[in-house]
Amino acid sequence: MTMTTEPILKVENLTIDVPMAQGTLHAVRGIDFELRRGETLCIVGESGSGKSLTSLALMGLLPKKMRCKAARLDFSGVDLQRQTPKAMRALRGDRMAMIFQEPMTSLNPAYTIGDQLMEALLLHRPVSKAEARERAVELLGKVGITAAESRLGQYPHQLSGGLRQRVMIAMALMCEPELIIADEPTTALDVTIQAQILRLLADLQREMNMAMILVTHDLGVVARIADKVVVMYAGEVVENGSAREIFENPRHPYTQGLLRCIPVPGKTKPGEHLGSIPGIVPSLIGKVEGCAFRSRCELAEDACSSSVPVRRPGADHAYRCIHDVPGGAPA
Ligand code: ADP
Ligand code: MG
Image 1 (cartoon, rainbow, N blue to C red):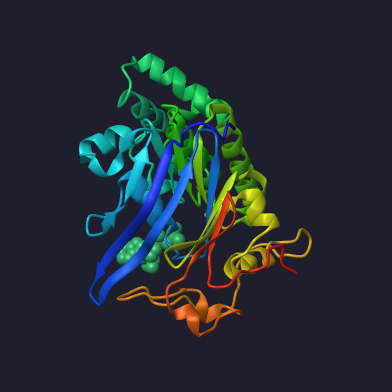
Image 2: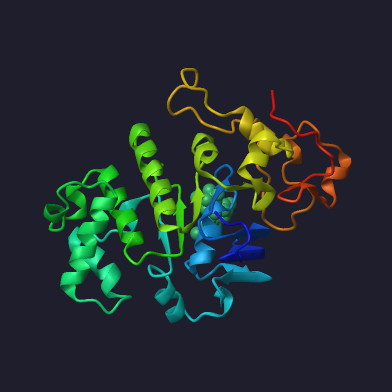
């Protein structure tokens, strides 16, 4: 990847508020990141930290009741905050595409795989049906589906979960998007199939030189494929940097906690959860002040309840903590 090119995606101070009966939920609170063509950014963080809402905001798919604003939300020269719903629909599936956790939410049970794949192309490109069909077969091949021709006439329910997720990937790639966002794309699948599908995604990302955002809680996967890592906690980015910096020199106590929980082959039992740091995430309803991690943090002190500085241990590395935390892999 060339680090000198302009970022394809620039996110600055992205904030997402959710109006609730009890008050406003500050689900995403001022996050920043950048991504270049050919790069893979992994977003990690436990459930509820705002990873999915961030992904949906980029795609213009947030539920209407949510309020989203950003100092900057630029994709390839397009200001995403100024696009009409129609313009966003034109971008989605064409220049940017998303793969969701559960393929059945994106695949229509009433249409064949072939029709849905072809539709993804016909919607955005002036191609004939025959050309769209040819591309569908080509993409099914690329995602490792054998006898692709004969799959075209099948309906989603006739496929296994793993095959459906491959079809979803093929569909997302029909128009060769510049940016692909995969939100925990394999969580619903069994472990061996998860690994195959993530490897496939990483290969296709490289082959097509796409920018990719992968939301995952599999840190083993992050270690293998991420160029950059964003660590989210309770709606904030608590640490971000190059994958190398994050793994070799993690600073934020939450990141260090996550890395301590990396599965060890032969030791970690399947299905064992990552990030089992004791304690609970604070409520993000109403006023949120100070470091959200302080109730679970070994280093917490009184000062953590007021504003938290961003520290920059390197050009390519930042974390949010009142302490100058020593780096280095945790014990
Ligand atoms: P993650 O993907 O990291 O697990 P989400 O982005 O889905 O987290 O959610 C962030 C926060 O927003 C959570 O507190 C979640 O409960 C809340 N949230 C997400 N979707 C909705 C919704 N449709 N209505 C109300 N709250 C929501
Ligand atoms: Mg999610």
